[in-house]
Structure formats: C-alpha cells, structure tokens
Length: 187
Image (cartoon, rainbow, N blue to C red; front, side):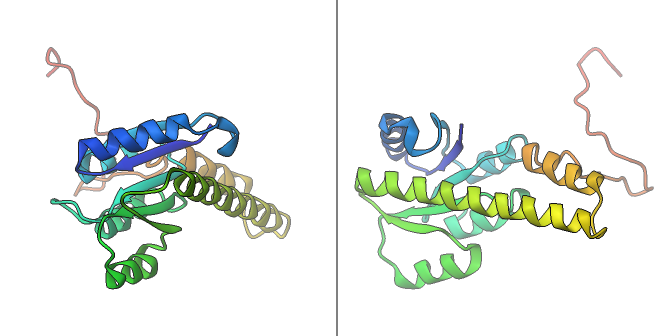
C-alpha cells in the first residue's frame, strides 16, 4: 500500500488531488494509496521525519518555500521518495531547475488531466519500486563480497521505513540527546 504526500498552499487543490487519487483504481498503484495532505512545506517536512512516503506531489509556487527548495530538504530526509511537481505556471527555467536539482520524475501542469495524473503516479511508483529492488540486490552482492554487513543493510532498511530512526543527535558535550517529550508533571 503506497503512501503519498501532497503539498500545496491551496486547500481546494489538495482536496481535488486527494479526491482524484482516491477515485483511482487500487491496482494502478499496487494497493489502495494512503494520502496525506499538507498546506505548508514545513509541516510536510516534519511529518516526513516520522513516517516514510513512497511519493510526493508538490506545488511549485508556495509562499513560504518553493517546490524545489521543499523537495531539496525532503530528499535529505527521504532520499528515495519519488517526486512530482505540480504547477499552474509553464516556466521552462523552473522546470529545468527542478529536474536538475531535485530530479523530479514528472512535471504536471495545473489543471491536470486525471488520466495523466494516474499514469504519472503509477509510473513514478513503479520506477521507485525498481530502484529499491536494484538497491536491495546490490546490497546482497555487497554482503556476499564482504563489502557490507547484514547489520548495515538492516540499518538502511530501518531508516527507509522510519526516517531518522538510526540518526543520533548529540549535545555540545557529546552526550546523546534523546529529545523526549516530558509530561507536565515531570521535572
């Protein structure tokens, strides 16, 4: 079941996208998609640190952060997420920049064609699946050659499933910062 992230500062666009995706046949994506929407890129980035997504569809022009800047930061958290940019502006320079900087899979124009959107999502998810399978097979070869341990592969897998799980935050003194939310009744 693929998990999709939709990011756009216009609530009507997010509602339309969600409705359109939910109406698509589950077979197109290998299972019914779980769709999460965000009106602010910062909220989407915070959520990406908590849960893994298979695909993101981001608006290009947003007030706080443009789509390319957002995707650049998202890639730091989830490097294997498939990326689509949605825009009502046919800016060739922006399109080339997005392709070169954040390696988007496809640029989709607003208003979109539902069939084109379904095809783009299905193809992006299929490409991601192939990339992930190629990485898994390459890791098996590295294990056989002794260049990678099973522990390293498991850490990689866990990081893919739960972004940030394997990263350690350290304090200035070298201590490990657990970043626990303490209740009001605790000191």
